[in-house]
Image 1 (cartoon, helix red, strand yellow):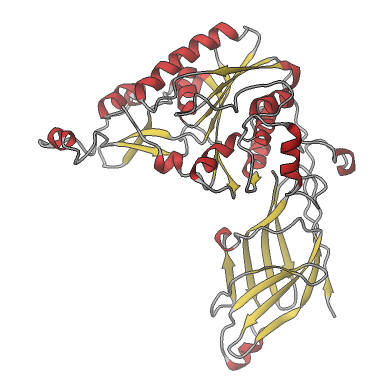
Image 2 (spheres, rainbow, N blue to C red; image 1 turned 30 degrees about the vertical axis):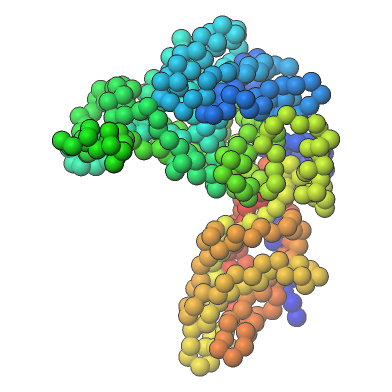
Length: 451
């Protein structure tokens, strides 16, 4: 006989007494207090991107900027900052100075200031914030290549110094959020560092080095200049590009299945992301928001924030979410990790004094296979991490779980299938589920993904 087990994932609402049925039409599931203060939001494009349209608001059309505005409401003003977009250090310095002047000109004294920068636009935003005479409430860096001058202390330990984020920013900016698709390698691999050398980086990191005695681990040798001139090497010796910023705890990576280098890099300013970041601007950055951002899931194909007719965007999404009632809050599930601990003697193979090869299968209630993990060899305890679960699960209300031993001659079930149900409230996205039977204990970390 099957063991029937009700496994409810308990998620606690931010505001008690709010029922799921009352919130089906909400586009943003977290119920957080919003700031009532007006906000000036400045959008900064990245390199090679002066003709991009994601920062534009065009009548009767949808874009990243229009969704940002819709999310924030009348309390927010959107400013589109334009710079040359040249992939040069001096161009970024000049842009930061110009952005400072625009903020001082267009932001009212009673307004909060938020800056959202894509790619190197995030570096322009960070550098500008440190030069302002007023505080900045929020800087959001979208797929920004954070540049570091890597030095060493007297013990030979590496000390990375952020080039475009001086210490002044820690006092000047209330919150810095770095948001990256997991499959976008532009920030940490492909980003060029044109026009920056050790000496210019040393100058920009002077504030970081005031209280530290540091050395350069590598310096140019006698033939370095000659090698540079003939193209055998470049001037970059101690500079690195990374996708995270050490001065903030909000380095958030989310799942994206979008393909193509350009789209992987630009999808971070999709129309939906504009709406989500509007809520980030409206709320104080906190752990609930960080958890929500980390569970974003972008399917492929996806929009990249380009100005588009609303009905075209609606049709694009409809084909993804045909059977999903509330796509913005829940589009898929994934398993982050799983562990099985088997009681000795529970697997048939143990009769031959052999250790089992464990694996498990999850099926729908009508016996359609949803996921099957690879076997773990010769152990009473088996573990699987996120890399084992690339396949996403559909939104699942209930299912059947079966643990198996992959024996030499046949696959032997361990115990009976366990029937479980999953019930989600809208305000949390992760939960640890533990199932105990007379044969084994299995622990599964579930994550709910949203658009």
